[in-house]
Image (cartoon, rainbow, N blue to C red; front, side):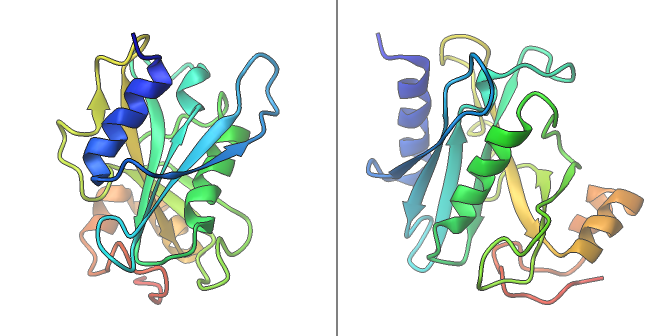
Length: 184
């Protein structure tokens, strides 16, 4: 029987249409927890895009997780794998302390990638996936729910904290564009 990780990666393969992601381990800094793996899908969902996912966040526990544990997902108009590595870094360093629930904002503390001034992420439903695609029930152990990470400017992070993620979604912005100006 395939392991939990193998079932999850097979699920990601069906979502991306690719069976050849680049795998980048993020060494664990948590005793008893394996490394986090960043999976990088270049050219997904289409050319000049990149999609990334994590595996390893869901190996931790958090008081706000009840039955379902998250992994992270990012999809941006870029070919720079640093976007996928950034969410892997967040998953590894914040597992057990950040719940990664919808509406959370995470200050990265510096520009996430050289091509962008964005310094934070907002957590919400993953881009490009339907609700039945982002929860994997039959993976062995607790089900995995994929949480989307959206790069945002610091001023947008503050707006989300003050007005909520739903208000931010109502603004006119391109969720894939990592070079866009702030919308607030």
